Length: 167
Image 1 (cartoon, one colour):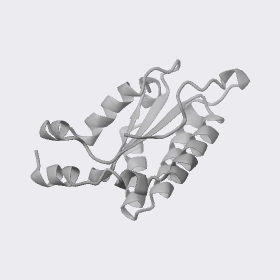
Image 2 (cartoon, rainbow, N blue to C red):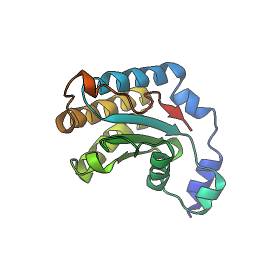
Image 3 (cartoon, rainbow, N blue to C red):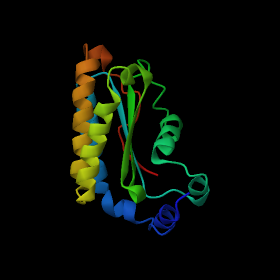
Image 4 (cartoon, helix red, strand yellow):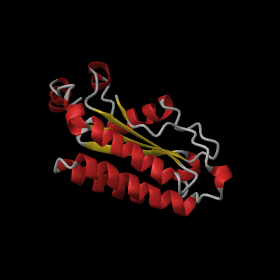
């Protein structure tokens, strides 16, 4: 465990998540997810967490490990076509992780996922949280349209909530 990371997480104010992602930004993220899902058969979830609690920090849980846990907890893995994707933001680490279900992950390389995460992280580093989130959703949308195009109105079943969450 790195001491700097421990202190960064422990001193990270809980209210900061709401400041970086206020309700109006969460509303815009939700609208972007809803609009995106109208064009493909995939499911996008967006989750932002300010900092980890002490126990996960003592266990040296990475942002990636936490994202995988949230992927399961939010049921993103439970879509009919296995085409769910979670965008997880851990603000204290300034880290973005994208976890895709097996049906989608086989279509996209790790380098493509890393490129989207990096693009979002660069925008977040400049405090452009809304732009970073919307850019990530747009890039994922492009991949979903390519690999899971909408086949008609019968495909328009929304399996997961479009509302982003603050953890």
